[in-house]
Image (cartoon, rainbow, N blue to C red; front, side):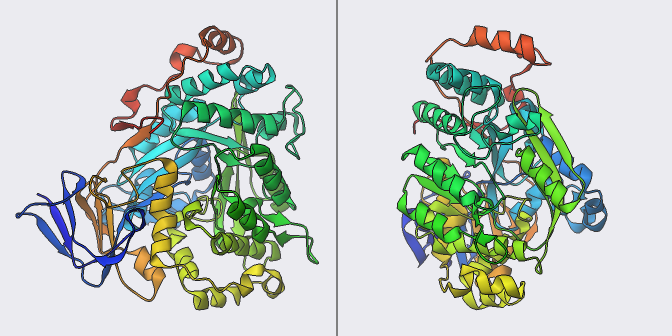
Length: 544
């Protein structure tokens, strides 16, 4: 049976529909022109109808996420999710929720697609096993290549064709959707307890620089016509004057397509009495001037969380600075990771500048199609905080109230204090679904035009935007009602997107066999992830 949604205000920026009362018809998991006379009718009077949310960057699966869960056993006590609450599976919440709880909580906010953006190739098999256990949403992974020694060898030798072939092979082998680079070269140098501090500093074991890594991988991805461009975590994250590294990286890219992730964490300067300042206005100007760039923000929220990243040197720095417990991991020949629990405090000058910098990026980037809502979950805070962030963006009086609660010293220095912009519902729809789906190259997501996937969220209108976006009246996933009044009523399992780039630029089979034999602990025959690990796989064509 189909579904028809009547009397709601449709907000669908991808199709240039803004708060118009249009009936939405759903049948066989798709948006259609007519759902039929016998369809189920939802009266959406006093409601806003949007496509399901699309999160472009959230850490929900893979080795580092599991280490974070192990380091936070208290979450299992204070935020226990039981079947008695109406869920299909029990679990735990907290800042790094278990798999089933992750899916339920995304669904209860109106999200229907999420991206795990940082999986080392060796961890891909288990990451896919975890994704299978995340219900209610479609998903995909990005594979980490910014510290791969195979990538480094091809770059050092000037073998761009072989690099292109390797990226095509590793993407298909891991059943990934795109490539993520974290602190290019820095995690490799961390093996020597060192780091890279600018994009033209050479590695110890390879005659290459971060500039070479970023431009070489970007060129290979462009040649492969991948749907999402290089997803980049820049060098020097989290330190004073990190914004300079971002600007140098953008200059080095010379107009190449790039997505700069959790840019807030690279938006710091060394101004002011404390020698720590927000340079978000400079970076926003940079984004505004370069149409090849998109960003997600990585908004910081006050409270307890855990930081998890492939940027091992940064995590050690954070551990030494806070004295908090620390996990460090090295993924053979590929990358590394670190995990450190952290508490963002309203009375901390530095934390307040971080909090403000994220909001400044949202408010100062002119084009909402190029800035996306994330917290870099869980690094800036848990994804369940999205409705609170939306309220701060849409309600300047509420935002000013929040500013009044932070460190008085920070409150006088942050550029945020003078910003008056308020986001519209249309702009919120762009930064949470339409824009992210477009940048990911997911043509059937982020909109509710005919032919789109029937992922629809219905929000009851309210002047309190946090309440409005926290508990949708209905969420429809692939044509089935899965949430009513903010609670899951049906469990479904979504698709896993992956790509298979076609190349033939070079023959690298012998190279790979030699490298695996000499350096890996596993045989190359045991390395690929088969489609049996993606029971509901969806291949997205490159070049579309």
